[in-house]
Length: 203
Image (tube, rainbow, N blue to C red; front, side):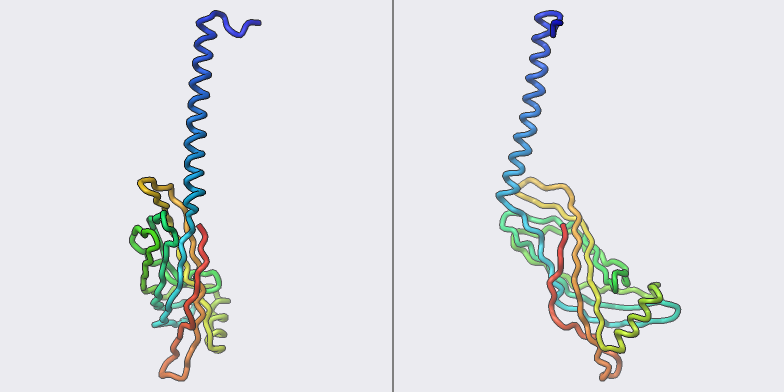
C-alpha cells in the first residue's frame, strides 16, 4: 500500500512533518536554555528571622475566647546575587498549637533586590477569637508554668526576577517559633521574648 496518492501529497506531508519537527525542536531548545539559566543562577529561597515579639495584651475569657495584641519584628533577606524577588502577597498571623489566634496582617507587595534585607514590625491583634476548649486549658497551664510557645506564620506568593524575565507565581510559607516567658513579679504579667529565631521557609 502506498503512503501517498501522489508526489504532491507526499511532498506536503514531508513539509508538514518537517515543520512539526522544527517546532518541537525549538520548544526543546527554549526549555533547555531556561533550565541551563536556572541551574547557573541557582535561585535560593529567601531567609526569614523573627527578631522580636512583644505581647501587649493576652487575655482569655469565657467561653473559649482569646483577645491578644502582639507586636513582632521580622526580617527577610534575599541571599541571591542575580535573582530578585517580587513579594506579591504576604499575610502574617500568630498561631498556638497549629490554630490561628490572630487575624492575618497583610504586607503590601514589594520587590526585594539582590542581597537586600527588609524589616517589618506589624501588630497582630485580635479580639474575642474563638479557640478550641483544650487550647484554653493548655494556655492556662502554660501561663502557670511561666512560658508560652507561639508560632508566627507567613503565607504568601512570590515571583523570581532574572534580568527582564519574571517567573510565574510560587507559594511561600514561613514558620517562625517564638518562645516567650511570663514574668508575674511585675504589676501585671509581662511576656518576654527570649531570643531571635530563624524561620523555616517552604517555596
